[in-house]
Amino acid sequence: MPRPIEAIIDPQHLRHNLARIRQSVGQAKVWAVVKADAYGHGIERVFEAFRAADGFALLDLTEAQRVRALGWRGPILLLEGCFEPRDLEACSRWGLWHVVHCSEQIDMLAAHKTQQPQRVFLKMNSGMNRLGFKPDRYRSAWARLQALSQVEDIALMTHFSDADGPKGIDAQMAIFDQVTADLPGERSLSNSAASLRHARALESRTDWVRPGIALYGGAPDFQSPDAGAWDLRPGMSLRSKIIAVQDLEAGQTVGYGSTFTAESALRLGVVACGYADGYPRHAPTGTPVLVAGRRTRLIGRVSMDMLTVDLSALPDCGMGSEVTLWGQSDGGQLLPVDEVASAAGTIGYELMCAVAPRVRFEVRELA
Ligand SMILES: *Cc1c(COP(=O)(O)O)cnc(C)c1O
Image 1: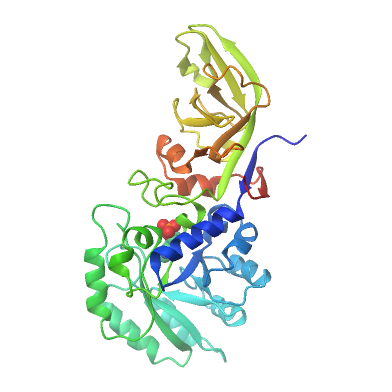
Image 2 (image 1 turned 135 degrees about the vertical axis):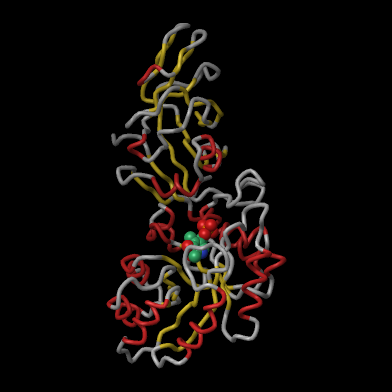
């Protein structure tokens, strides 16, 4: 028998989440963001579920080729654009749209020999200060692109830094609107947080939305509210089993560094899941875990291949009991990945992306 840990990808949940985003954004077209190998889910495993999207947005040429190899003939967008001139040949060959965020990328386009005019998304840095032209440089970048025979179509784009928080999107929206008011072309503004939280404000101002995390069932703004409140369902469920049980007496300790001491008699389950599977090593005692669908807590330090959970209140659980590290249990109980991430001081995105290659993946609809 293989080691019992597995990541189950549920296509029905992924389809539901895509429909949920569509419901929120009205007429806007949807880029399914599948960078980082579909947030760790695997491009090939999510493709069928996301076929109903209008396009796929990602970073790597190899990922773009994988989407084409699956038979996708529709739009594909490179979110960081081209890294070197050669990449433009790949864009021509594979019909990829690409982001232009700096003048070097315009230089590359100007020098590019092609029969195939390119579709680009010109990115404005409206306050995120990562990629994009500053507002006062944006229109001259647009004019330069407009004059190139290599460019067929220019869409306008920006990215919000605070769509998930109290600062919101108003300041960035105002800058973007002011600079682009009279420019033609489609607009692409929203990530998951903006698509869910600011749908009303963005209605009819965004032609393309770019949801990532919400498609996979993560809350873009965990705790205000959680994924369930947004009616999002887990795309990935990480499950394993109890492979050993230990009975501890008061005063005995658990695991490396003896960081946990039993205050009274305690029944401990050992789970086949560790940081080499992608479970966060920093998850502290108290991090929620489901055993046979019931909530309990992690105790002691997470080690490479194992972690330990408290079975004291679950006397009927033991060797072979199903453990859900995040996602949905066999009985349908939910443990949001965001909750586990939050306990470990990170976000759901990072946990999804970090599931290790040694974990077996399965695509299956959960009951
Ligand atoms: C990753 C990314 C997104 C998706 O963000 P989520 O928070 O996962 O919805 C959208 N736009 C750009 C430019 C991105 O890089």
